[in-house]
Amino acid sequence: MTTVRISDDGLALACGADAVARAFEEAGCAVERVSSWGMHWLEPLAEIDGIGFGPLRVEDVPKVLSYQRHRCEGGDPASGDDTNDPGEMGPRLRGGDGLWNEPIQHHSFIAAQQRLTFARAGRTRPLSLEDYEATGGWAGLKRARSLSPEEVVAEVAQSGLRGRGGAGFPAGIKWKTVADIPGARKYVVCNADEG
Image 1 (tube, rainbow, N blue to C red):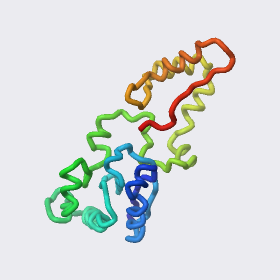
Image 2: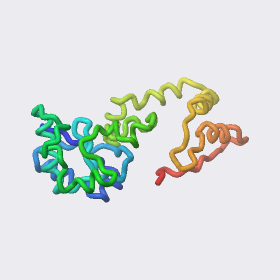
Image 3: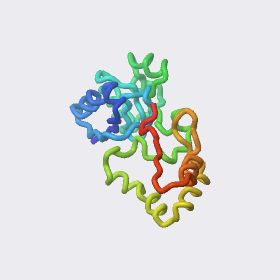
């Protein structure tokens, strides 16, 4: 059975991810709802065996599955035959900034990044503690609990971790500033979702 990963974040849902997921399910596929890769212009984005297709519409699903069957039967996806041709989807996918028959990891948006904080994006279910734990999600917290507060702040500063907002403000500076302010009660005000 073919397994298809499709994002279930808010933007993907607004772009029609539920309908596309249902179309794959109705075609006999197992659908895993995962977090987004962050390439919102490609939503709904489907991933099959690491190969990405998007943005998709319900009517695109048969063509994607035809391509997948051809690939699994040993066909050469780069052979140029019509199985690899997105047909009417072509202008939307290839002519724009779409994704057809390309490993998601090789897409220029992803390939140019060193994904640390978002290494699990597109791979795990966003609300699943089991997925989080299975991919080492508690390791950082466990290590931080073994350090003093000063050591934690120094570690964050040394890591070079930056905010995901447009300014990319260094998290270590923010944490040290708050830690150095006198007083027993301190507050950090931050937005929970960029963009």
